[in-house]
Each structure stands twice: as C-alpha cells, then as structure tokens.
Amino acid sequence: MTTLKRGSRGAEVKTLQSKLNLMADGIFGPLTEEAVKEFQKSKGLKADGIVGAQTWAALGVARNTRKIDEIILHCTATPEGEEFSNAQIKASHLARGFSDIGYHYVIGLNGEVRPGRAEAIAGAHCTGHNTRSIGVCYVGGCPKRTTPNWQMAGKDTRTPAQRAALVKIVKELRGRYPGATVHGHNEFANKACPSFKVKEWLTEVGIKQ
Ligand SMILES: [Zn+2]
Image 1: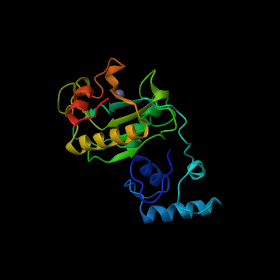
Image 2: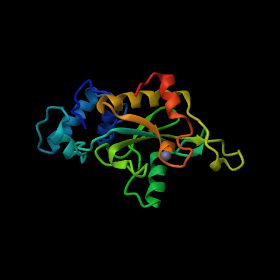
Image 3: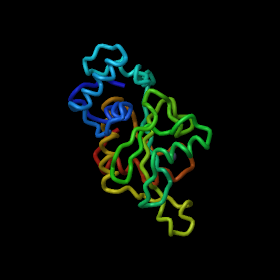
C-alpha cells in the first residue's frame, strides 16, 4: 500500500475508506482525513491524517512486499444483468476452501470498484500466478439466466460503466506496478473467464504492454 493523504484517489483509498466504515468513493477528502485522524488518535499514533506504514498496519493492512508483475482479469461467471455482491463471492470462495474472497477488486454492474482482499496478500484466483498478481473481477460473464445452459457459455456482458472502470483500475494498477502485464484468466487455464479477449481489448482502449 502506498502512503495516502488528502487529495489521494483510487482503489487504495477505497480500501482505506471501507476499513474506516466510510462510503468508499475513492477520493481522500476532508471527511476521510477527519476519520483517519480520529483513528490515529484512538491508536495512539500521530494524528496527522497521513496514512503511512504505521497507520496501514494499525488498520490491519500490511504494506505490499509482494512483487507484482501480472494483473489478471476475471468474471464472476454469473448471468448477464444480475448483480453479485462481494459477500456472495466471498461465501462461494469460502465454500471452496479459500480463506477470504479470492479477488483484490470486483467491479459491480454500475462500475463501482469494490475492494476484495488487500493487495499485500496473495489472491486466490489463478493457480500458479497468485503470489505475483493482482486479481480483478467484473460481475457477469455469462448469458441471461433464461438462456438454456447459461452456465456453460461465456459472454462478454460488461456494461459501459464496467468497461470504463476496468480501464481506470488497470491503468491505476499499472501506475503502481510498472511493467505489470495484463492477462485474462483464460490465458492460464482452460476456462472462458473473463469471457472477452483481453489482448484485443487492451489494443482497443490503448493500453500498451
Ligand atoms: Zn477467472
């Protein structure tokens, strides 16, 4: 995790805000700063409103010492047009024996980026690649529930808001992990996930790797 202060923006700010039970809009404004100072005071830390290593540690979020060189994209493999919450994803991952939600970020139908497990912790989303990667998942990836055998067919169901959010988070992550390459889960496993061609999409949105 990087050092955050008033004016910071992005996914790590959302993680911070969700830890402080604030609305996670990803913008470190005066309310977030106030909440950080309160939290620091309650922990006997210097109440400067700046979230550095000590404050992250006090929040239970370790500084990321992993070397990240891949960003891997997924879908929830749920029907088109149906929301799927982080709690639902977590429950299905716990049922599969994971210790927590497997992804680092989940993008809801409305484009909201929802923090999953902390970036400092290896994910559980792509066998053989978890220690070196960040996992980002959008909700959807299968046809509508009324389609026969909808579970069996992959479909790119990304809403315009999800597409925009995906570009934003991938760019942000590559800013923080320079040189990290972007992949679909299907490049590493015999799966349809994320139900779109990542390489073609990267070209389309102008992300070079
Ligand atoms: Zn996947």
